[in-house]
Length: 127
Image (cartoon, rainbow, N blue to C red; front, side, top):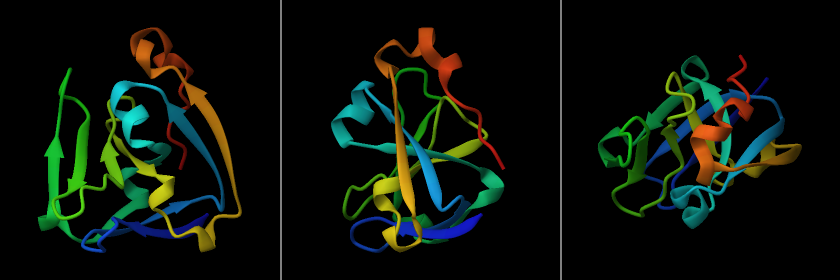
């Protein structure tokens, strides 16, 4: 496992995660992920630490209300959130991580437009 650091565009929100250096991410085509280009790296809550910016975060929910989309109030970037698919963890936008600690990125598609029919295809969070 590697310590990766990340954050929002303006630097108000900073966090670190523990994850492999070679990351496996999911590209979802649901309405929100498709529009913002989010590349999901799922981590457990124990492998996520918010270092600064809790007061800079705003939360957006829609549809089922389970997903807690966290955006920086200043720059609008969603660098992580609590996903509907993995409510006991976090989804990290790999685009918001410092690339220096990432050795490779393997991307897999997920048909989030048909979420209910395809949710069983998503991998569980590994520790």
